Amino acid sequence: MTQATSTNEIVVIEEGSVTLPKGYKAGGMHCGIKRKRLDLGYIVSEVPATAAGVYTTNIFQAAPLLVTQESIAKENKVQAIIVNSGNANACTGEQGLLDAFAMQKSFANELGLQDHLVAVTSTGVIGELLPMDKVLTGIKQLLNQENQDENYFKKAILTTDTCVKHTGVQFKIDGKTVSIGGASKGSGMIHPNMATMLGFVTTDANVAQADLLAALRDVTNQTFNMITVDGDTSTNDMVLVMANGLAENTQLTKDHPEWQLFKQGLKIVCESLAKKIARDGEGATKLVEVQVNGGYSQNAASAVGKAIISSNLVKTAIYGTDPNWGRIVTAIGYSGVPVEPNSVKVAIGPFTVFENGLPSHFVEEEVKEYLESEIVKLSVELNQGEYSATAYGCDLTYDYVKINASYRT
Image 1 (cartoon, rainbow, N blue to C red):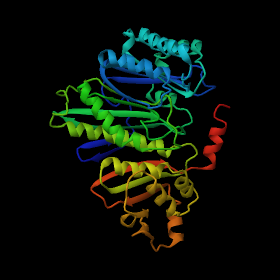
Image 2 (image 1 turned 30 degrees about the vertical axis):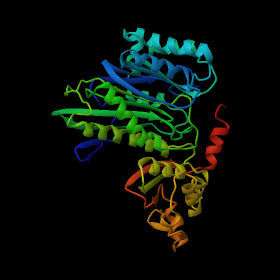
Image 3 (image 1 turned 90 degrees about the horizontal axis):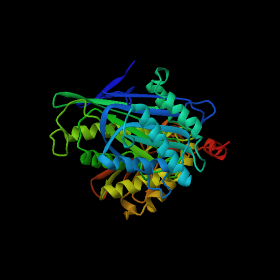
Image 4 (image 1 turned 135 degrees about the horizontal axis):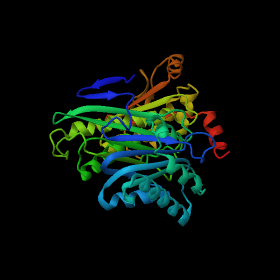
């Protein structure tokens, strides 16, 4: 049953996903890249959709990213997405680029579309060529009725993830019901430097492309760019948004009176997906949330939050339920943000552990008990200004090492 909660004028559809908005279908199948699990998926819109994307900042960008960026640049439209997991098609040279174009062309032919209306994405092992015979055979079968299931798509994009990640929202614009849905994958190679995962967001809103891209970039900086698992920025990371306009609202731009409502809905979807990725970090047992208040700028507050959430020493302390506040203070100190040590306040959950340049009195056993929670919240007050930021991550466990030591085997 679909669960819904209301956030002011926005209704959160907890079981929503990429087919929540009008005019989208999705599916997936096993084509043979992986041994058993689903590894080929798609999203298709009934009509060409305005498209916007943000991409990894890693210099070694995988072939599918290059193909997708080139395709969107032609007319800022996408009508379908083809995605495979199990093989990243990264660092594969000219052949990898040809293979990405071949995936695009093959799926476009199945749909009767121009090639550039199909975006291509891949995730998995780096440095190996795709088994194109299996991939192309799979694409010819992908649209078969037995493969048309949104849940298959959500599973087909996963690598080391332990669960699917999805959400959706609905709200009214110009009296029309507008929906935004999203699905993502990500568990390892997660670091706040552009998304560091695959994210797919769909909406039936009519949105101007330039403003959609600006909104996605801003929201990404507040959500996907504020998560970390292990400090690694992948070669394949991207977030794509499709807006097909089937809600029939007046075109949204930054000057539309309900623009902020749309942008808030987009942020809710992206933030939910980002938190689910952080919670599903490889080997993780806890979601860690760092709230930074009182920054002199947005960048300053964000930088402090990122420094704390990225600290392996902080993450291992949380795993070990060790209330070692010194590791948090150390991360603040090397964040690059000039702070006044005597003005900083640090709390672990409800317990203040550092204030006025000195450790606070707290009962260690009580803080240790709090750190056993599935969600751990750290808060920092900088007392420099009015800006705030929230960063998300997870604890660092023995299992993270086990998973990544044998990733290819």
